[in-house]
Structures are given as C-alpha cells and as structure tokens.
Image (tube, rainbow, N blue to C red; front, top):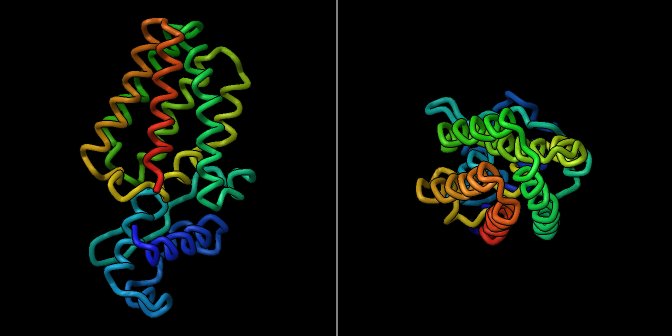
Length: 222
C-alpha cells in the first residue's frame, strides 16, 4: 500500500472505530475523498480496498461503500494505533495463543474439538468475504482458547474480541490481501495444522503450529 493510501486508511479507520462514522453510514464518495485528501482516484480506490479487506466497510456497485458494525470496541485495543502497537499485539498473541493451543491438545473434549472443526469449516467457506471473515477467523482462535480448559485463556481472547483480527489486517502487506486466493489458502492451511495437532493430542505440535501461524501473520505486516 502506498504512503498516501496508508494515510487515508488510518484516518478513515479512526473515524470508524471512534464512531464518528457510524455503522451503516456511507463513506464519502470517491470524488469527496479525492478532494478532501488531495490524492488521485487510484489512491482512494486502494485505500477503500484495504478497508474492505479489513472488514470495516462493504462496497456495493453503483451505491458506494458503507461502514460495517465494528465488533467489540474493546477499550485496550481502541488505543492500538501505530504499527509498533500492532506488532506488539502480535507478540502478545503469540505468547498467549501458542500456550492455549498446547493446553487444548492435552485437555480438549470431543465436543470442543468439534467446535474448532466447525469454526475451521466456517472460515474455509467465508474466508474470502471480508465482511464476514473477521468474525470467522476470530471464532476459530476463540474456540482453541476455550478448549485449553483454562477459563482465563478463553476470557482473555473473548475480551480482545474480533478487533484483534481486524487491526492487523489494515496493516498487511498488499501481497497478503485476504481476497487473494493463494494467501487465503495459506492461512487456512495454518489453521488446519493447529486443528490437526489438537486433534492428535500433541501439545508440542499444537504450540508450534499456533506459533508459526501467528509469527507468519506478524511477518506479513507491512
């Protein structure tokens, strides 16, 4: 993403997350954004595309782009604004979720494993839909945390909410758009590795698979 598009994404994202642009409201039109930010239509389209990929807006042909309901405005994550903040969030998730996955491999019930599998299936089905894939991605990670058998892991991930997925997406390198089929398949494969290790009851493999997945996400950040 170009520097100019990045600036537009950050400004519009803050308006959306703060509620200045309410869910259901229409984003300013392309002409309005070109005039407000003094950039080309190409830059505006790039910025709107990034907001779509992050699950913040949905665009309808001939009607424009509309703000989606922002999931769980968690106070702590509302303050995650800079690139460094997002990198530190990923470091935190690597530590927490890797251990949660290891515990899940050791403690999960058959019902919890089935829940992880259903979340994985949902993500396979709708992962390419930016309006729904944030929730589907989050559901998988939450199911793994709950399967740890330690309520603090599940409570913590639930408290972070879907924003822990959404915030890094706005900073992914352009090569890793969620709408890119190859990238989506890589992410699904990483989720499958976590699920498989938990299913086998292999804590070391589950810990490694979760760490690889989240470390790869961190590496994909711009």
